[in-house]
Image 1 (tube, rainbow, N blue to C red):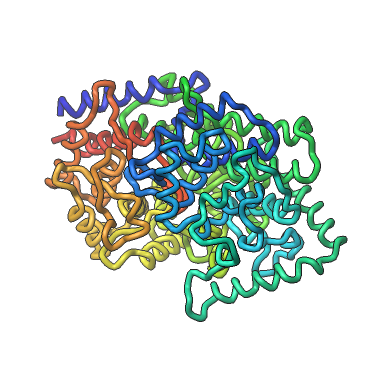
Image 2: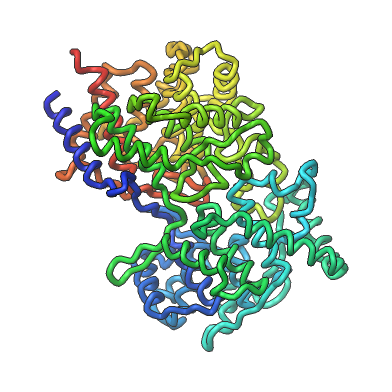
Length: 631
């Protein structure tokens, strides 16, 4: 017990030491090198080339290159084709010679992985803008899509929020098809990247399934759309472009951001520039300033974050501190709670298009993202406000507004998605453009579990209709061997933790067979060192990697919290997990975790939240202490 108490105190102190003066926490949101590579391409496209900055990016890219010449999607992962191509192109634009050893190795790896013709759509779009890939090889999304009524299956509000904020500006880029000439020495860059000889084989669009399928039908439709493009009415096209322009302008936050994510921000700036906006015009200048705020410069290195996570990091830090006994009257808690209350979004956003009955009141993930509050952050904030014991006079109407908004976002299937309600038309993920398979935002078990945890904490009974529907959704989506899929964290350990915490909170009988299967799955997947780990490869190869990976602090914490929620406290598996966390805690009071345990797009985009190694282990140790201290 003494060692446990000391570990909790050291972890608390480490966490508090990282709080910003304004009251929030924010750690780096680390991902792969793609967006940093695209930053170089983006700057060339708008004519703002900074050679000193490029040299720092090259240094960063070289530090991330794997021995086989490629670049990975996540720490410890294999080389990824598109990530490697974009790093290669960025370095060539930055002046690195094609015969330099790092690029010779990269080129060899690119060819071994299939070459440019097998790259993802976004990689091909960037190269098309430089004349290094033909537009006929890129699936088309015409700007006229913005005019489709909401009753139409493929209207823009049936795409996920993150897709929508990228696709609208991309339709402008597709329509304009500007051509930017590469610097001397790079003008035949494509020939360095293709495996196939020049010809149509480089640009053919193939369905993911060769048999008769929706993918095949959409590939054929793509060909028809391209063939008919020359017959498009100039009046209709101009009207569609003006609607896209207006949509982009209306969706820019007052700080210059679009959607709080870098792809939307870069593409929106490009779209406005291609529509004739000068770089010093208000929307473009503010957009460029916003992009710069996502950069991290350290000595001779520069990298770009895909997003920033202050609300998320703050609310989970507050929860960890509350779980570990810090009262709300302590200054760190007080400042954090006031900051969180100031971040509530009290205006309509895109969510209101499909959710007519909801009123504003959610929270978003970032500093500024008024158009896209999300259910996960909102539920997490409300949990933190409740656990911290903030009195009603200080909460004001924030709790009620947030709860009403969250309840209005429950989907018809009983679960919750991230940003929209009923965003689940599966055919959309079959179109050729959807090569990341992430154009939708359906209900997920991890988000639904967090929503249930909130509802249980504030007194919703198991018999309540809203709870009943959510539990039914969770039961219908359990894997046969017991765990639940994790959409926003890696992976089945994350999903299972949040479901078990939610079920416990609403008073579900935790001795039921379906819950016992989940508990046994967690116990069976504990590593020999006492911890838990799960590789990002579990999304690509679930049968081989589900619940399998090197032990990490955050994933061990998730497994422990899931087991404790299920009533498994005085069990050797839990004791070994706690011992693992105590043994691996470092001198400053935190844990070392280079692994990526956050998920952006399953299979394609993973995140290392630099704060996960701080607050999740503290939560787990604190809950264990609370459950065992009497003994």
